[in-house]
Image 1 (cartoon, rainbow, N blue to C red):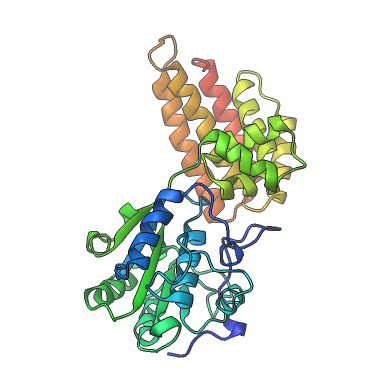
Image 2: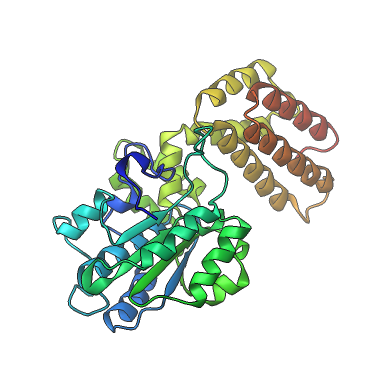
Length: 351
């Protein structure tokens, strides 16, 4: 099967507006353990047939995958390159990878449906089948070929089975890099045929330090709040900063605090703001669920409050926000119904 042309480029759903994409990123933050493990195997000439790169979204999984790819395509599985697997930005291989034009690199992601033009919900089997032809080619340093599946979690059942067949009969000098946010969703037989590289969330101080460089316009208090909300993920923090994340988090807390005396006019204004933000209903729903969970945990064991009612409400709100997002419904009714539900539950016992 022919390689994608420039007009068929994959939609970069993981690009953060105004920031470099992972294939354009050369600095990997806070993942020295995983990087060292990969470097030792590659530079010793004994890399596995496949790596499963795992961890929460936005912590550098794709950045690490592209770093490994650049090194293999430039130096092969040898110790000819730097110990940290870096390749200079002006190296021809790095330039080609940055331009998504290196013949030795194949990236598989969900694309646009040919009939509807909308982003597909799964990574289909036809995409995975492209790997067989791709790995039959010769390219890169010493004939190395590298494929990145990002994320492998998006594969449907047929695609997963096709990938498993390839892993059972691995071609020589080929590297498969599977990126996974939720490895438990993958077939156990796929996981067992990959070596795992676990990436960790950054700690609070580490993340705040990085955010000071990326977001110099933010105040120390704002950076601290972003780091707390992002759960150790640089990508999540940058997305929140660019999508009114702090405002939505504050509004979620305010809805819960004022549950016993709701302001429906303010809720309506909030709904208007959420509707104008990309993925606003998802982001706000996530903050609301987390804020409720934090309060439930804080009150657990103290008595005086029927926490089961709040747990049930949280589950109902998760379903409601999920349905609104999936069906692209108007957020106004969802938020107003949420305010009403919070008020009713609060009357039976405030958090």
